[in-house]
Amino acid sequence: MSMKIFIWRHSKFLSSWSMFDEPHVYRDNYLQAEIAVLAQSREEALAMIEKDGPWNVAELNRIEPRIIELDTPAVISRYVNFG
Image (cartoon, rainbow, N blue to C red):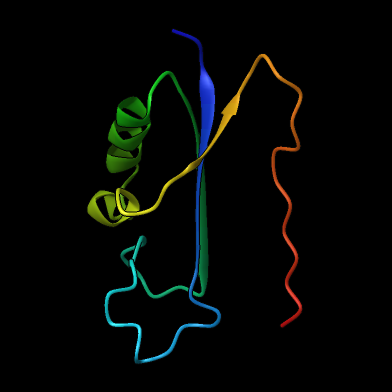
């Protein structure tokens, strides 16, 4: 099994009180949160995140991570905030 990069990203930037079922991926209050993990599987990545502390793994499970294979060229990350 080859290694992959798993990236979970969540933004509450445009959320409102009407979005009651929105994930809350970090235990403290946040506007934007992102975690990237190098692992062989999603399950291994989530286990590593659980050991990292303040992340809510049950909520991360609700979000599909971006998965980057290490044998293919790819843009790893991009971020733009106009706020």
